[in-house]
View 1 (cartoon, rainbow, N blue to C red):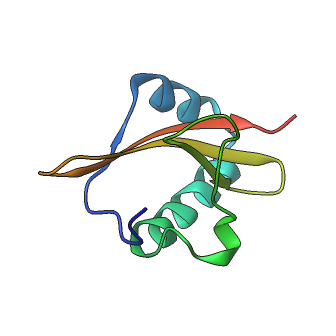
View 2 (view 1 turned 180 degrees about the horizontal axis):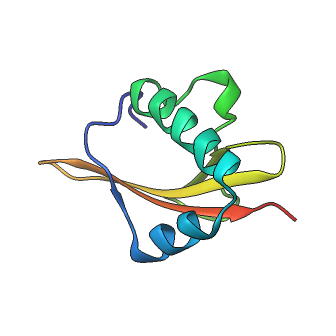
Length: 88
């Protein structure tokens, strides 16, 4: 997995879930996203592969909220698709 993300997009589901989040969680996600784009292995993000998957990953937004994403690599581009969810 590459350290720096060069291309990404948000799914329609992510956009809806993001808009439904409390403003302070949106702010926290925005801060974490900036860190993630520079270095996806930064320790405070706690990025890890979701067990039993090949390209699904998750990282911390707060202690209660995590963002999951799909990491895809092709010869021409690297893509990251995001989804945000509440940890239960």
